[in-house]
Length: 70
Image (cartoon, rainbow, N blue to C red; front, side, top):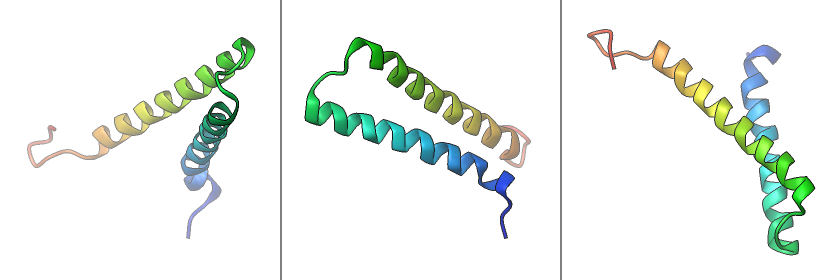
């Protein structure tokens, strides 16, 4: 059984990915985004990258070889 705290990273990923998918569809249908919306999209993209980097760092600290190193 999972707790809400356990699901938080997955929920955050879902939210980020859904936002970026919506933007992709909008760009495909309407062309390039207006300048005002670009900042929001860039922020969502950076947020996704930061979250990914955090996940990778978490994996690195918990997964190590038999020597205790990568």
